[in-house]
Amino acid sequence: MLERIREGSQGFWAKAILGLVILTFALAGVGSYLNAKTDVPVATVNGDDISQSSLENAYQNERARMENQYGEAFANLMADTEYMKTFKRGLLDRLIADKLVEQTAADLGMRVSDAQVKDALLAMPEFQVGGIFNNDRYQAILRQAGMQPQDFRERIRLDMTRQQLVSALLGSEFSLDSEVEQVYALQQQQRDISYVMIFAKQFLDSVAVSEEDVSNYYQSNISNFDTEERVSLRYLELKVEDLMAGIDVSEQEINDAYQANMEQYRTAAERRASHILIEFGDDEQKAREQAEEVLKRAKSGEDFAALAKEFSADDFSAENGGDLDWFGRDVMDPAFEEATFALTQEGDISDVVESSFGLHIIKLTGVKAEEVQPLDAVKDEIVAQVKRDKAQAEFYQLHQQVAEMAFEQPDNLEDVAGLLGKELQTSDIFSRAEAQGVFAGNQVLNVAFSDELIEEGVNSEVIDVTPDHLIVMRVAEHQPQRTRPLAEVSEEILAQLKADKAQSAAKQWADEVVSLSASGEDIQSKLDEKALVWASEANQVRYGSLLPAAVVEQAFKLGMDAKMAAVNTADGNVAIVRLDAIHQAAKAEEAMLAGLEQRLTSGRSQQLYVDFIEALKEKADIEIHAVQ
Image 1 (tube, helix red, strand yellow):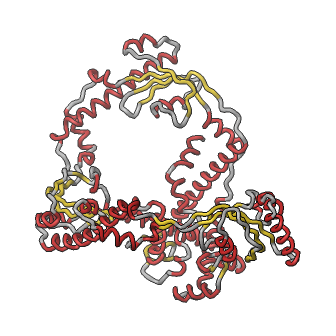
Image 2: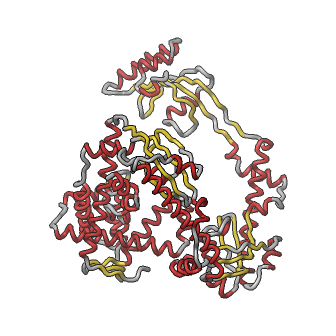
């Protein structure tokens, strides 16, 4: 049961399900309603079409979400045409699931009331101004999209109907307290184990591999011997930083930059003040009288902080004796600000000041005059910025010249190298999987392995690796994909088969040792033959152990009635694992069990939804058309 739950909560579907549940709002947003057009269908589900525009809307919204979440990493993936095909197909699968749910909801007679639709419209941020629904904005957006309000409301109704079915489905799952407690106990259980590693190389001399074995393995796994396409590139790189060393900056340029950016080096005047706020309340005259009385007491020398704590309606600052910390111009209420900046000496107290918040008594507690950093203090910073600006301008100019020269002389890059004052570089030959450095991004890889560069032998266009970094290249050497002949790989296969057979022999020997132990015989002499020594590990946990994964997994499969087993390890060796003791988990806190119950139920709900969609697909008539 534990394994099933682990698979359900950590597997692919658990990671993908958030993109499947309540799809339309999460995936396409309101844009999918507003931009839908009648066009060529990309799929037909039980006679209902899914339009190309629906897929495109879903694509644009999901792309924007992914770019916002993953940034440049997703931009690199987008340059891979095969990935983007898979990406779009995944979106189409979601829309098909959406359509199937819609049809099922209709078959079940589910409906959403007009009031529910209205509430949903009022809550949509697309139609709000200042957080409140605005009918003019609503009508304007619909007109811009060429939609009638009635049609749009029906689309919302349809989506909410789908959500109704999905919510009912997901809400049907639950986990019993006993199940949660059992899972917790299994997850938190610790075990004392011992193990010995049996190295397969000890059995190499006992195995034999024939030429027929090698040939059969080659024929059965011939696709494993396909080489990847490889290229070596002649290329030139240019970065803005490359140009900065050769740029001089005059004193006049420094001074001009300083004057032009004076605000950047100016620190505005600030004041620190404390205040006592008297709100008008229901009796304005009484408030004014109270303010005057408090002012009189403050100016007579009473502790201002104590007065603020006693009388100020600004609870937050009153706790700190009325302190408002430092502030500059255009921060406070205008009347409050002018009164504060009119005070000149620390300790000065204003008269009663009226603002939109009420009546204030202000005490000046700090003064920071306006400061301007002198040129000498910021000269190095200005020089660096002017250099970068000039280098940037030169970079853009060279960018254009490189693009023109590489296009006009497509059979070489020597003249481009002369223009840049750089030597042509040649990369090592590499495949897509082996690409490193500047070549590792899909943007560069797709150009390097393009038919145009390989078959026509021309220069690439200028590729902007970043806004401050360009590369232009051509293929120097190309090795097409091929299947390596048996003669070339026979030694490699021979070594692999010997290693496999040696591991099998080690496993067979280990199984014999386990069998002897199970029958009550002493196995120490057998272990001594191979100079094997038990290693003991106490309090091992199910997850996060530093031991080999196969050893830990096997240790938690053993029971006190079957305390020993042999297992292959990922490094090609074998381990004998012995269970020495089981330590049950401590009693869980309620909050921990509640969190686990939520995760278990969520995992089951996710799997239920996946199974539900798969069942609908099996019964449905689904036709996939070309996906653009």
